[in-house]
Image (tube, rainbow, N blue to C red; front, side):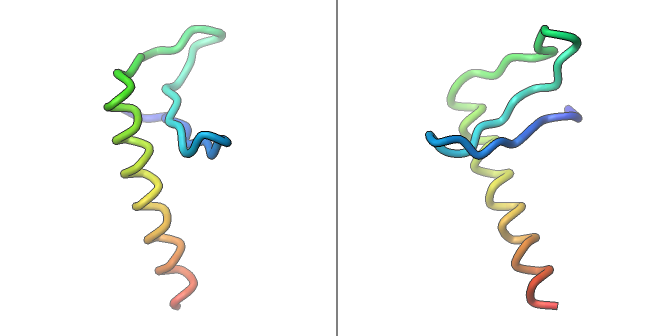
Length: 54
């Protein structure tokens, strides 16, 4: 799926699906959404480290 948005909130990282006007185009089970947020955060953190190491 494309167009996911990773947002840092006071409760931690959250992943939101793309939307069409005001309707979400997908919904995620809470455990799956948490796993997506964790995986994206880890991947982006590693990418940031790679860029600063260069």
